[in-house]
Image (cartoon, rainbow, N blue to C red; front, side, top):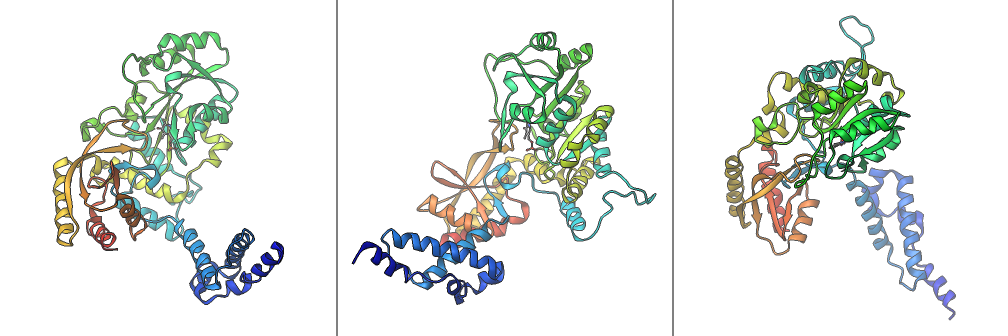
Length: 463
Ligand SMILES: *Cc1c(COP(=O)(O)O)cnc(C)c1O
């Protein structure tokens, strides 16, 4: 028999798409996706099988093909956002949605999500009001700025500030601050998309105020001095950078703008609050002369994904009127969460904000909690021991600043297999893997998750 005849004979055993899509094992998948979408996945599997047969393979049974369709459906559905217990010890984990929200922020989001809300109408006068009026007023009060504008995230805040004020003009930045934040945010690229021209000054490790002065002398189009807080790495050794006050003074003397990208937006002094030094406080930047300050709401601020621009009223209003502002605006659900978070700041109730509470928890408390987990796990037959570890704040803040913590170290045969089971469980658990050890860090697991965590570990252990 010719090869092509053999292939044709084998191809006859490949299930027909329609028959495959109607297979009884796919009843649940059909309910989840609908008939016509399931047919698309069945067609993909049939094509895959046909390729295998043409390559000399044997056609699998229709039951096996149905199982492949089910696998594809499972993969698709698993791509939905799922809850995760964060046992990594990284407080602001960008891949896990950064800051968990406060109870009030969750309630406000839920309430806004359920029905209609007075998003752009002032209920007292019945007139049209501005979206985010409360958040913006609160941010101005909390930072000592004249005005504030809320957008979708800090990347959007920086983009809007540069586009709205620097389009077609030059922006002076130190070479030591041309950083990549992760997730594709590189200062030079954002600058390019904004339509502003990047003017680099200084060197990677040293930039002085004289470098900025020279840039202003040499480049007629230079209108803005931009200072970027590189939160995710640290330079040590022979390093120098211009002080904020010096930059502010220079900008005023030359009639230029001075803008700061803070990254994380600390609204309180985290050194005094949690013993974490190095993250600039937004109010401090305004006091020291930054004319606009951009920062994230979901880093050390501890709110939902959002970005803030605070500073001079005239500049903020100019940005508010920029067409780009409409495209970068914040949605109503995160706005509700942001308002609730800022209300806690106004009331001085910092403990209500999970990120701040996590950062402040003393190691002794984390230790006591992890010891309780270990006892519960031991009772269920899972060997675990409390060990000291270094956690991280994360989210591009507090570079290499370890956050002393305690973890439950699990004794398992294969760390890789065990963590796979934890990750694919319900709820999913993300541990920290360090030198092949499986660690559950007590700092980042929410107070209400103790029992769920232990149950999930026991289930993974017994599987
Ligand atoms: C994190 C960060 C950004 C981006 O903020 P997002 O809120 O993630 O968009 C921009 N600049 C700096 C310096 C940052 O640290």
